[in-house]
Amino acid sequence: MLLRRRRTAEAEPVPERDVVVEHGPSMAKALPMIIGSILIAYGLTSLLKNSVFPNAADNFPNGSPQGTSWLGIEVNGWTSFFNIAAGGLLLFGLAQHHLAKTMSLLVGLALGACAIIALISDNVLGLAAANGWTELGWGIAAVLLVLNVLAPRRRREREVGTAGMTTARERDRFARRPQEPVDDRAPAATTSTRRVDD
Image 1 (cartoon, rainbow, N blue to C red):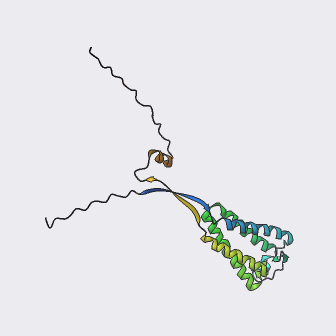
Image 2: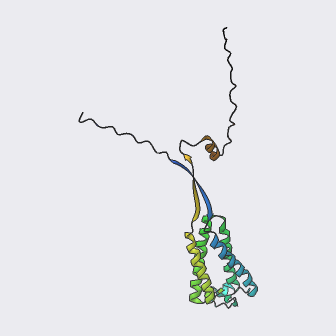
């Protein structure tokens, strides 16, 4: 017939892939671990050089604290405290991937703010002593930590079978259920005797 509609062959449904995503090592933990260790080590050693904490009630926020040069960086007790606190937060964030990124962002913004305030007033809120090298160190650490938010996490996708076609062994493995024992014994062969007539 002319007006008869032609039947189109139904396309076979494409089975969906059953994929397991395995998370690999986090690339966001290396930089906070290095910078955090440096900040803590420098803060602790600088306390040995100068452990004077100017009185916050008298100096905040317009004081002019005096520090001591330690490896070219001017420090006092509050400068060391800021460094130790920042390094401790970075090392605390190494527990998880997203926590490392969050701590990197927070500490990076805080160190950047300290560097800008020190650049304007030659100290941080009248408490922490700072010079050009202190501002430069805080600024570099701040930029690196803020950019660390973009660090990826490695992952690998592994196909375990197609949906509806996964073997029973794979289902039991990923469902974390104990496998049922399988009876592999073959049924006993039956012998039939046939009578032979002479």
